[in-house]
Length: 475
Image (cartoon, rainbow, N blue to C red):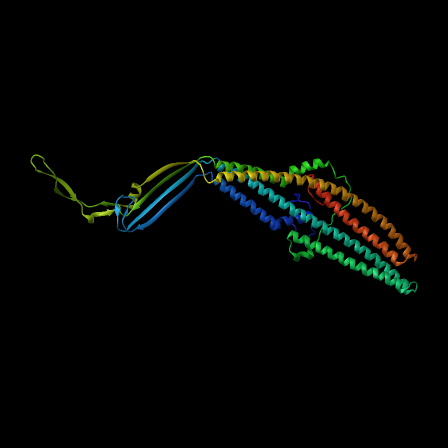
């Protein structure tokens, strides 16, 4: 019923199974072992990883590359600019960096959005933790309720046992009939069955609490609860008006803060989408070199010969020139280190991208982002409305539960007087067992209703106190 977050994580010493468990220690153990909480924590971890990626998007990218290969067939060697037809080994290596200079502030807004998403994940984790604590508190009080009903059943059986013992003596003395004794024996059997049912309810509620806590069921025999004193229940703790309680809850509850963070995140989503309409500017810089097996240098000594290179125009006399003759056996592949040094190349490019038409993709992205922002705004209003209604309902529930508690208290007092009078008359032989049993039944019902109304009022009172900013505790 109550979806309000409950700040119940208390720093107390570790619980050992042999000790009696308080509500605080039960909640602490549940918070440490709940699988839903672990899943919620993973969502926080994912949001933090996304934030790291968004921050990295603002940084330049830097990559190195290297190749090693062979080529067969005719091809222009990129390092010699000549045709090579034999098998040629080649290597290339380099490093390149890409700088995003401007892209409509999309990366900056993405980083801001990632930071908000971390905050939202943490708030959702807090709400999940508080929901777990609320369920544990409710289950804990259910165990206490059933334990108190068990005590009532024990007292009733003890009272019936005394009557059976008294009537047994009277029967043996011949003062009453066997039928009168059998009527009380029947009441005794009924009380025994009621006590067994009460014990079963205690064990089932204890099991339900252990399962919420993720406590091994093997510890069932050692699982004992500290029973606090629930007394002096009045309306003195209902301080302040419902309006002030609402304002306190709106300021502190994680679901409201989470909805506010979600709205801020979706608003940034609109800015990110609109950034896609703006031009983007990036720069790329590279530095590299390479090696080719086709790059050769001559290492021998050439010979020279005279060859005609022309003729004198008037006389026709040949003009001779000197031509070096290279021996092909004296060519060697240029050294790897020399090629790496000589083949160094550098580059710097700027890229400007101006979006003109992209199939309405930017337009659709902006529409979706605006709709998401509107949904987040509505969800925030809805969360506030639900919280206000929950506070108002909690306030009304406390008033109604208090009225029922006080009425049940009066009913117990009246039923107790009526039963004491009926018991006295029964022992004096002025009434029969049927009237005695009717008085007992009315008292049993009144005590049961009082116990349930007491715990119902107590739990609802603690819920209202939490809305007022107070931690829930049975201490």
